[in-house]
Image 1 (spheres, one colour):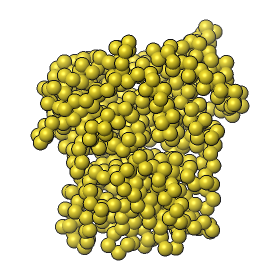
Image 2 (cartoon, rainbow, N blue to C red; image 1 turned 180 degrees about the horizontal axis):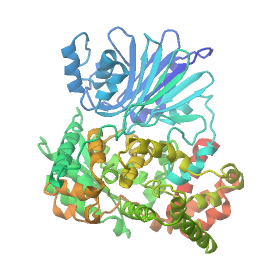
Image 3 (cartoon, one colour; image 1 turned 30 degrees about the vertical axis):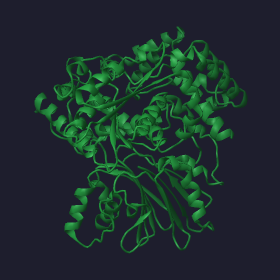
Image 4 (cartoon, rainbow, N blue to C red; image 1 turned 180 degrees about the vertical axis):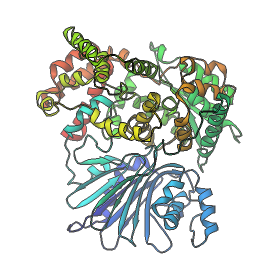
Length: 634
């Protein structure tokens, strides 16, 4: 919906907030809000708020931000949507005592809900949001990120001030914001393709974790609270039949899609031809006054294997009577896009799918749509990845009562054979240390491989540590909330809900779509649907070893059987094929220059990966090198 930013002068600081300072930060994000802008600075120069507007709900000028309440004691800037805002407004109107100045702005609902219930109001919100709210009565600043982390919120504390924004580039507009690599978390980036919250790859820049609020008190002290967890509201489905579970899923999906249709501007659907996006399109078109607009991406030329989902997308578009749009991409499109990709990412998001997400977003925007529904989350909630089936099988094997000494012998044998950099070795190592086998749905390098890849200085600095230090708090929270015995599939979903989805998959959607002024909405990550999915027994989700078994049962009849029963095909990019073409020479040139100017990576290991044509792993390093060149060296 928007881009938000602000700055708070901390106690004892001589720093004074000015409108020019706020506007400079704000206007680094014009792409997030091309429809308008606003800024507010307190009379004492203590705090300022800025906002770029993408008009979606209540297009009137009175709905602009920053927005205050009746007496000016509250000021808010907000990025996202409160889908149930009309329901909450009715409740507030019935309670009385609130004066409204907008017709149906969800931003104003936030203000009056906070007046009525305090920070507990966010428990009532059904939506995606990054909120900054200044309470003049208590001199407190509140920063809030939505439950699933659909919307980002970054902050930094330096030189007597706290700055925050929807994008890191806004923080970098502060001339005193240091630009340096956060070397301590680089090994985690090499594990997860992203930097786990609360860190970023910029030293001194943090991001608010999902489902978290932070309060900054008058004395400058900061208090952070996790206000929601997907395991906090379990449903007892142990005795439910599969038909009952499937029906419950479908009903929650219908509500989630209906809520995300609410808009005062055109809304469309990204359509890949898989189960998730096809379900979105079918539910969206149900009862629609006009044909839904759907958008698909494929690849031109010889890379036909990456195009064949277009056939399925067209099949679904015809089925629901959609106005369907397609675009074919080439390696030339990718090469030309790289500078813009790095600019929009802010910090590396080492998933090449950023490329098609940007162009499908642009396709939608160019055809008159401002909001699109996307399918993220379904695979994580309903066991949709083939790799998850392998991981679950390995975890169950690891549970066999095999003496630990045998596992250690196996590790020794693999080291002798030179296999200690493989994932097979890594999985066995985890098992031998009684750790979960599954460390996330997007692992880039093993712990052994990372040590070889890092340059000598960083290798020494990270000696004795692994990325388990990031996962351990998530594991402990999961175990404390799981009763009576943790489910391994539950762990896999819970972990990705806390790491891969909010910091990788949802960020590639947010940053690439907002890069063209388009909002992405995620029905499968409606928190009520997530709570339901987390309550479904593992045996029900994995029946007969069929991926997405219970989701397929829920949507059969809604979408064609041809779509339900087709093999899964990820939203891929032909990186390997293009690596053998012009992309490979560009990567080689950039990494040669990067290794000559830095000591982050071992050049020999980097070029071994290039010579072995490990295209995906090389891309992760390439993404980091381009980011360093654009944001750190510059």
